[in-house]
Length: 229
Image 1 (cartoon, one colour):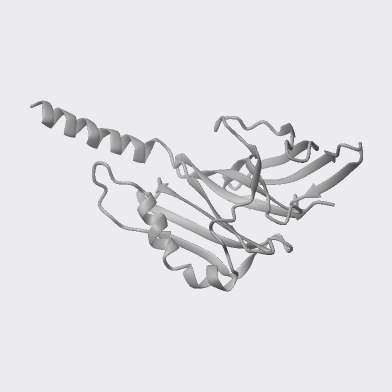
Image 2 (cartoon, helix red, strand yellow):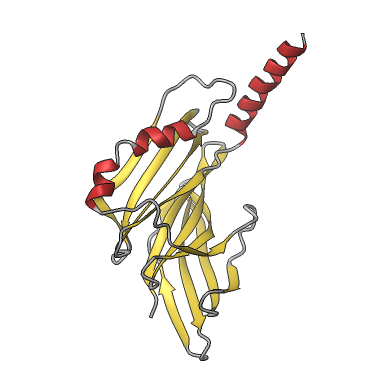
């Protein structure tokens, strides 16, 4: 009887995880040797479809855009069992990207240097202030968001204002992203990670998107890239 109760509890727990909300797991897949390309992905359970999914992208860091052959998406029909891990969807999709990763010389061990990490996933503060402990430079960031509703669906955009002060007191100001791009279905944005690439000049900002998915919400990721002055 106890074993039966445990099994029922596991099944109910799995169902709750599936329907409680779509929380994506972010994966850093590395840079090319010249830091000209960056590969990342994420995976989870799609609430609206009730299926595991994965997405993988290769980004041209100089153009701040995906390469034409570097967008991969998978949505998989499987029967969910107790203990099932959605990372299986990611591994399945990753196996189809090997040729592209080789083409752009992605090194999965060269993941850059993390200079900012959002510890609290619920923290969506738009103002960040921190120090790069390697260079001792001070970073101040403002995430400017704009959201509205159009035809019953959320529409939003964002831009990033960055100020960096080095140890000599020299200040550099940059505008990142394109606030003219309006994304349907996206509710809010939050900066989750900031990486400095192996070249020490290229920067990747990993941005979390909270999206409306039917009556629930889901999480997806995107990046903004730029070069330090």
